[in-house]
Length: 187
Image (cartoon, rainbow, N blue to C red; front, side, top):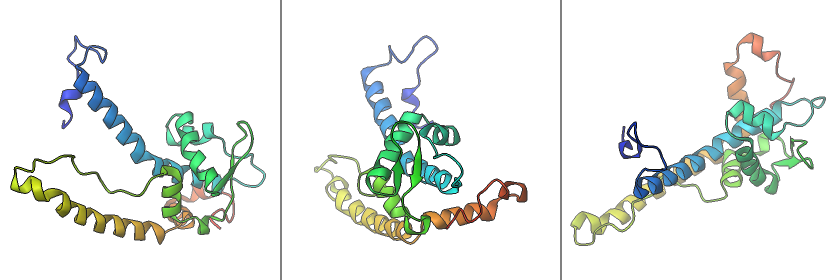
């Protein structure tokens, strides 16, 4: 396990773990949270898109049940989608509805709205040792590689829409599952 130092022995608990381990634990927890915002957003939007007009709007609790994440986390993710105009929110806890057609919601727009920060493939370590020849040059070398990777990912996300994700999901459905979806739900 790469993060072995985060584990505690049977006689320890997180309250007695060394302070450095706690800092690393919190950094990893933040990284995991950042990494899931996009997938939770797409998952939630697919649920909202599939709700029929007769259905009540999809609530954060419903999205949380389907994604198996906390409803408060779902609300934080959805707030960016509301602010960007991808969905609308009914006052109180009445739920969310699509504000645009799924074919108009690109995955890049969804990412940017849900994450609220530029798309990054990964971070580089900070402050490499300038006394080392590799340390002096690693940041520009990897920055160039990451820039190309981020451009490729940005292009891939910009070329796909929520409509495409819904179509891909529908192609994977068992015939019994198809009846559970609203007709034309991927428009």
